[in-house]
Length: 183
Image (cartoon, rainbow, N blue to C red; front, side):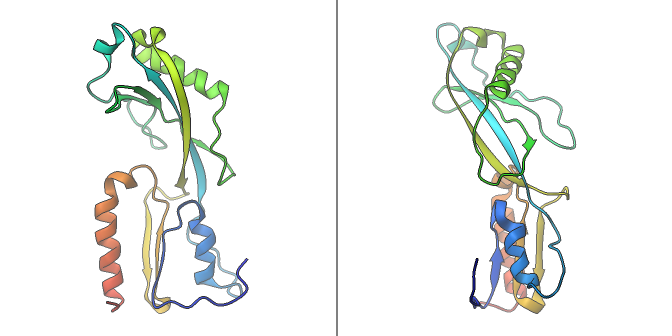
């Protein structure tokens, strides 16, 4: 809890999983308003294979992905620059903003999905697993908006696709910053 005012010429809220909580600072405690978006952490788990034998020659040269839904792009399979094969991510909403654990049931489903996409994965060695959290929200689009009256810019709910869109997001946020008359 912050018990003293924080002063800034401009605030850019790009707090990821905590974006909606930081947004409350813009609103203040007395307004009774709620943030325009609510972050829901979405966990993605991944399985990592080390190809051996003939599988080295069968490692995908392109990303294998299903038809996306409105909710997710689905589980994909790809080969890393190190030659490992990754299967994932999953997309499961959760309450915790910090729980990046993996679980055996989900990893087994990823293994089955990977082996269906590339049957030769049955002979590959699983060398690891990991997960990450992305900040989803109730809106389909990123939540990027300037509030000139408070010199505040919100950059919220930037999910996985934000990695590809980072340059464009950065340019757009800078244009919002310039529109506030701050240089």
